[in-house]
Every structure is written in C-alpha cells, then in structure tokens.
Image (cartoon, rainbow, N blue to C red; front, side):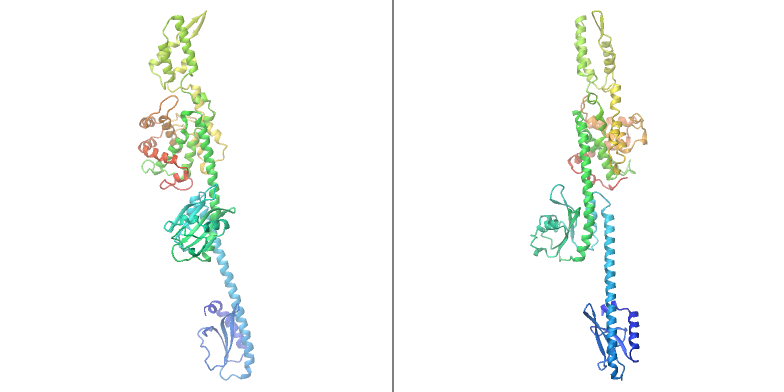
Length: 584
C-alpha cells in the first residue's frame, strides 16, 4: 500500500476514474487496491463482496506487481456488458501503470537532484572549512571535525600524512577511540598499502575475514579508509574505525569520498606551502649563520635573538597586567622569529676590520708606536716600557679614565728629533682614537656600523615576503631605535617604534652583554638585566618590557632553549595558550 499511496495522486485518479465511469453504465465502481486487497483509491471505499462479479487487472511497476485495478458491477448489471468492462479495465490499468511509472521517475530524479545538491553543499562547506588554513595540522583537525557529528558511525578516526621524501605515513591527528582501538598501527597493514596504491576508498565491515588484515589494530572490527589525493599523489590517508558491530554502508563511503577529495587538495596545498616556508626558513637561517660566521664572537647571535625574542613575545601575549591589550597571532610570532634571524643581515656590507674590531688601534699600529717609544728612549735615555704597557691596556679597554687620558696626552706631546727632523710620538689620529670614551670605534666606523639597519632594509626589500610578514622589514629597520630618539637610523621616538622592534632591541642588548665579544668578556645575567634596567630608566628602551623580561627571565631562557631543540617552529608556537591563527 505504501508504494501506491506514495505514487498515486488523488486528483489524477479522480479524473481517470471519471473518464472510465463514463464508458460504463451507471453504478459501476472503479477501485485501486494494494497486493493485500486493501482499497487505496477512493480512500475509505469498501472492497467488493465475495459474491460480486468483479473484474481485476494487476498493476505493475517495472514489471513488479504492486496492486490491482478492480471494476465492481452494480447489482443486476447485464452480462453482455462484460466485454466492454474488460476493455475499460485494461485501459484504466494501463493508464494507472503509466502514472506510476512517470511519478516514480519524477521521484527518482528528484531524489538524485537532492542528493547532488547535498553533495554540492557538502563540497562547498568542506571547501570553505578545509581551506581556511595552510597548515597541515589545521587541515587534519578540520577534516576530523567533519565526522564528530555522528553522521558517520565511527568510534574513532585518524589521519596519516606521508613523510616528505619517503613512502612512510605517520599519524598526524586522531579522535574518539582511535588510541583505544590501536589505530596508529593501521599503516602497518597490507590493506592500508593497497588503498594507497589504488587511490580508491574502501569499506571493510569484517576485518577478521579480510586476507590483507592481520590484526594490526586488535581493537578494530570494521574500517572505512580513504586516501587523500593531490595531483594524483597520495599525500595522506583518512581511517575511520568501528570497535563494535560493522555499520558502514555505501552512503557513508560516498560521503567520506566526497570529503576526502576536497581534503586531499587542501592538504596538498598545505604541504606545498609548508615546504616553501621550510625552504624560506632554511635560507634565512643559512644567511643569518653566514653573517654571524664573519665574526667568531657573534656566532649564533641571530639564532639566539630570534629564539629569545619570540619567547619574550609569548610572555607578552600571556601577560594580563602590563600588556593586557596585546595579543599576538602565530603569524606575528613567526614574523618575529624571521626578524630576529635577519636583524643583522645589513652587516654583510660592513668592512670586516670594523665588524671584528677588538681594540682601538690595530696591533700593527700599536707595535709601530712601541718602536717609536724605543727609539725615543735610545735618543733621550727615557724609560718607555711602562708607558707602552699602559697604552696597550688602554687600547684594549672598553672605556678610559681621566688618568688614562692624561697619560695619552703626555705621551702625545713627546717628540723624536733626529737629523733635523721632528717625529711626533703619536699622530693626531692616534690620539683621537685612543681617547674614544666608550668602545673602540671611531666616529666614522660607528657611522658605518649604524648603517646596517638601513642596509638590511635595502637588501631584503627585493624579497617578496608573504602578506603575513608585511611588517618584517619595518621591525628589522627599527631594532636600534630608542624611545628617546637617540637611536638609529631614523631617530624615531616612543610609539613610532613597533612593539616587535622594542622586543628585539632588548634581546639584542641582552645577548650582546651575556656573550663574549672582541672588546669585552661575557657578563652574567644579573648584570645584563641591571644594564637593561638602567637603559629603561634613561628612557631608551621599553620599561614594561624590561620588567617583564627580568621577572620571567628564567622562563624565557628555558622557552628559548626548548625552541632550539625543536625542528618545527609550528609545534613550538602552538604551545602558546590562546594563540590564534592568522595575522593581527
């Protein structure tokens, strides 16, 4: 009755019955009944009695009987009318079967159209969901989220990704009872390898009877497994498993296959993007290492600045006191890492004798002064070795005292008179160089060093960095600016300097102090922090950042060390609570 009731519309049958009745004498009834003899149309009519001389004709749909058409004569109907009744019944039955066939076709087409619409909707939603990120772990997470609603009767699921450059597939992410069922061992099975080779999804509702399965995951009883294909290459595999009675069917296979087709393309794009990012990072690290290698005392400086800077940035992100309104995204932190790696790239254009300068005067020049003092002693009989030892000490010192300046002035006034010629003990240039108040660079050499942020910008501006690193060059060019305007190269002040640049500025000073340099020994952390506090008090660097850096120094150092031990920045960055995808 269900088929007839579903496919036959009252208005169609009413018209047909009326036409059939017009061909018969009054009193004839035209009925439609199901295979059990129950009247379907007209609804509520009584079936013919056992004594009625009714005529019947089967009703078929696709050659399958689904009911019968019945003509019930009125009491006392003339027997000679039976021949006409039989022809009317044949006409009526053929017409009803035509209605059944057309309505069935219409409904099949409607169902197929609805199914295609659902598939398109699923593809559209999956495309939007799975392409929101270019990180493989985010694509994997979004893919598994598609099966958490219960539409697919899986107890657990797991995604495998192919390891770059190999044929091995490694577990990436899972949900539900994946661990309990041992799904991390599915990749060891011949079944898994067959699906990878064929590139087609499969349902196995009785794993125990499948010859390709040897109980690699003892907890599984059934499995739906689908390859993730990108450019005809299998980049990953989705495995959905059941730990109880088998429940997967063809509809589930079609649904999962549709999702997997979109996920494969999204995962392929993400893996390609990741490989490009890895290449960029490797090139940046190689460039930073090459720059640091010019000076053995700064080896590893750029790497340490990158790690300490992002560790401090994470501390800022988590702080709810001084930086409650600051939130960094993972792209922001990645940008800080690259800025730390490349902050000194402009030093590639600095002369090596300036970059690695460890004394005020080069050793060769100091030896010449020693020879002058020795000659002066020969001529005058004066004592020179003690004065030369003091000059050597001053030459290597980071600063000079008043006594040191007096000694230089006294020696500078000495002259050697021989053969009518007068030779000064120290040239004006040598006096000025030895009298440098702090450090060992002459004004000209310091100007050369101070060009390196601008040089960094000039060198890097031709590299097409991605949109999520649009501030990278600005961060790098500002890392020597100071809040009071005393920095370089642009003399920026206060809020003109990006927070990221202030972070790198503090870390750059800290690392320079705690590491040995040509002109000074390494100082302990507490003294480095004291220098930072002094600089902050003088209004040069951000006092809140310095305070946070000092309070969290141990944690920041440990965090930077953890990053040094990681090969994947994304895994390290993902440990930051509340970190968001994208760029701020």
